[in-house]
Amino acid sequence: MSLHIIIDGYNLIRQSPSLSSLDRRDIQLGRRALLALLAAYKKIKSHRITVVFDGISDSVFSSEKEKIKGIEVRFSRRPDSADTVIKKLASDYREKALIVSSDMDVVRFAEAKGAATISSPLFENKIRVASYYDGAGTEDEDDGERRTDTQKKGPGRRLSKKMRRNVARAGML
Image (cartoon, rainbow, N blue to C red; front, side, top):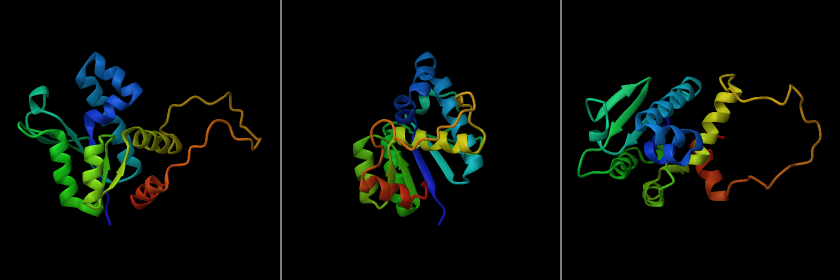
C-alpha cells in the first residue's frame, strides 16, 4: 500500500519556527524552504507528497497544480480554500492518505474518512529526524561527546494512544 502524504502547506509553515520566520519576510521564501525540506525527505522515503496552499492569486506559479522537486503542489481556486481541497483528497484516498494539519476541522473530517492524521509540528519533527539520521541533517553535536547515563531528561514525550495508532498506521514510526 503506497502512502500519499497530503500537507496543509501554510498550516505547516506557520506552525514551524524556522519556516514561519522565512514566511514573515517573504511568503515565497517560506514555500521554497518547505518544498526543499520535503524534497530532502522524499529522497529518504519515496512516499507521494502533495502540498496544498490557499489561493493561486498569491503565487508566481502559472497553474493550480504543478510538480516541483518531485512534490505535487496545489493551489486552491476561489471559492474553495486549501481546507476544501485537502478534504476532497482525504475523501479520494481514504486509508491510503496521511493528512498533515493542525486544523481540527480538517483532522476530524480526514479521520472520519479513514485517513491517518498527524499534526504539523509533529510531522516537521519526523522529517527533520529522518533527514538527520540519513546524514542530510545539519544539527550540531556536542563536541562529539555521547551521553552514557540512562537518566531521562525533561517530560515524557510519548504520544497519545490515538496518535500512536495514526502514526503507526501511516508507517512513520
